[in-house]
Image (cartoon, rainbow, N blue to C red; front, top):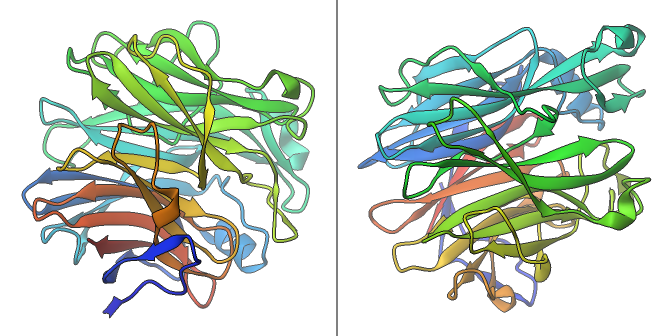
Length: 389
């Protein structure tokens, strides 16, 4: 079915047309956090998180959670450029004794798929003492407490049909990092991962870590952004967390930083993320040092950066204030300025702020495929794709 974008505000541009396609929906599960890669020709693979009854019921009660011990990472394929998805191809890539969050998939120069996933230990509040890692979140309304276990990596040499066992990324000084990003590869095959440190007692800080040996070992923790005013409370400063990084070449990188300045939207408190405008930073030395983050004028949470065939940068993002939805902006100068006066509305009829997390690729024919998670009329979260030009 083809629909046009709805009710753009005066500073928005309406896309000529956009078609919406269900990637995966199950009324008994809560699906979220998609990531995608174009493998070859019209073959697209989408990975996403799927959680069970606890998350479904929490969402339907109006208190959504992204921490669920009964959650897993799945993959599904499309052979026609994202128009239809083979439900028979859906398979579980990772299912452990921990909860899973925020998978990010990338395709490396050697053709391998590399999947990064966050592992979260989720316990009833009464079992707090069983946590082996520092507290990430406490939800009295859901009677849960959770902690980050670490970041896992898996590889596939056959375009996602089979996967290696997972291995945890371990850092010498601090393993309690969180990420929602795919790993990126530089020209010399060095790997970079955008991550952040999250504690409920202070603002979040974003970093880059690096692997010189194709992901076997990681280190060189490099600060991207930190707000010193929030040392004593996450409510007293700007939280820099989920950050999209893109390689502009020759050691130059751009970071589009999620910058949460508030945890309320339209009078509601959001226990699983804040809102704010993106800030942008640049590195000329392959990510070791970064410029001071500066405002972009783009309101969104979080970003995906895609370089288009004509050289422009495309930023797609969730829009977590009314009208809730998915939006995009372009840059003609490698991220220095963005066309905020012609913001593209991809979708804007969401019933709740708990949606979004878009990821985008450009097909060979020039069309954009953007995947995200979305609430249907009954409140079930599912994975949807928008195809637009």
